[in-house]
Image 1 (cartoon, one colour):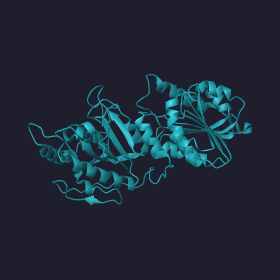
Image 2 (cartoon, rainbow, N blue to C red):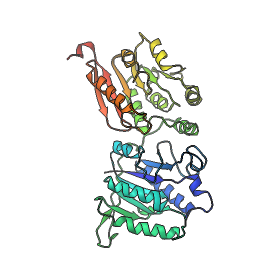
Image 3 (cartoon, one colour):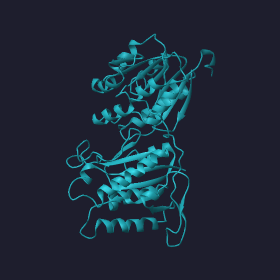
Image 4 (cartoon, rainbow, N blue to C red):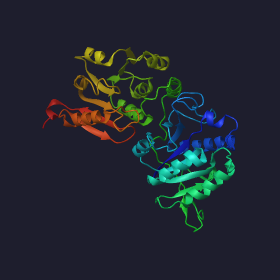
Length: 398
């Protein structure tokens, strides 16, 4: 069973304003130790951030930012929420499902609100839960101290058995991200509870391109939250490595995250053209990648640029914008040579989808599946990926 670490609401405004939560610094230290062990075992790390429409904890504000001492890396997942339930109206559930996760280690703030609610909801959704008993915290309240509140929840939550999956509470340094270990006699009835987390995971040893960390930092500073997932990018690199001396086309450059992964898979005789209509995003890409002679960066309207390519041939197209995907699909596919690959992502439900977008996705999938000149594979993984390989005319039979 695959596992994930969920860090809830460890944000500047909640941890740095006086009075601070109980054991604020110690809790951050314990969380960082958990995060380091999770990454070392290939377990994905999720940082959840609460937000309000305005004022305190407003998205993008200083109070909303993750606490400055947290060990956050580009490969981690960032989840935005607006209720105590980290699953409600967020992408957490769909992302965990796409990763095949069945067990969660939970820590963060606040014990009696978001940690409690998320733990209960996770169990209700059939996730096994390991609550890091000394790595969640809250503020003192009129009716009880923060320490009493934490002690109460560490004792109460593991006694909830009606959901089916187990909830166990163990100290942070006892949560093992590796070979299976059991903690016995955690419950009054003496039933053994396993809190071990499985080490096998897609994110283990990704070997990110050299520029990724710096691009991620600038991407987050710019407030851009539509970048391709690391798993999708790793797949792009592997696929790119199968196309020697090839021409690559990326529709929707963003800040250059997927661009960097494509370049990392390409050989020295290949060339990538990437296009986006947002100069501010391309400025980040250029800052880190423009020195690569295999890369041409174009700032243009996607539809117009696609039409200008008529008659050219490419071996690989990654369409990460509306152009060449929901618009001008035929024009994009015509650009592929036989055996060329067409790749698209974000085909699983995303929290930023506008009304009616699910129908567009369904229509696009249907169109691709009906084409006789492509062999299509759908991957319910990462954000939802479709691979389509163009076949020779003789293979395009009914």
